[in-house]
Image 1 (tube, rainbow, N blue to C red):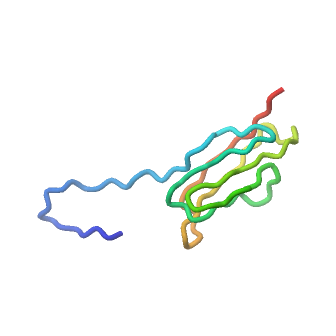
Image 2 (image 1 turned 90 degrees about the vertical axis):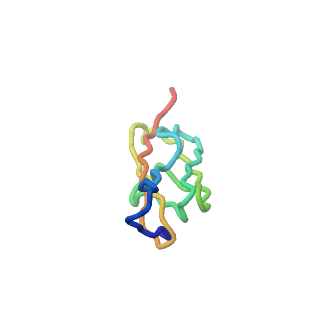
Length: 100
């Protein structure tokens, strides 16, 4: 960061903003949901799962689509926001729900 440290300053310590992904914690079968984190450069879904797919991957936001197969109901999947170096900066657990 570009903040200088000064012992004689009367300015209080700055608090780092929370780095959290914003979006629905539950996605329903067949739905598409948008997730946001302004500082995210790219998005990934945990490897080895088939229930969710990223259908739009833009800086700061992505859209995730859930497959319409009822076998996925109750599963949880991890969405990861990446910085420009490809490091994980935030994770978000999405639970798959169904409507019957």
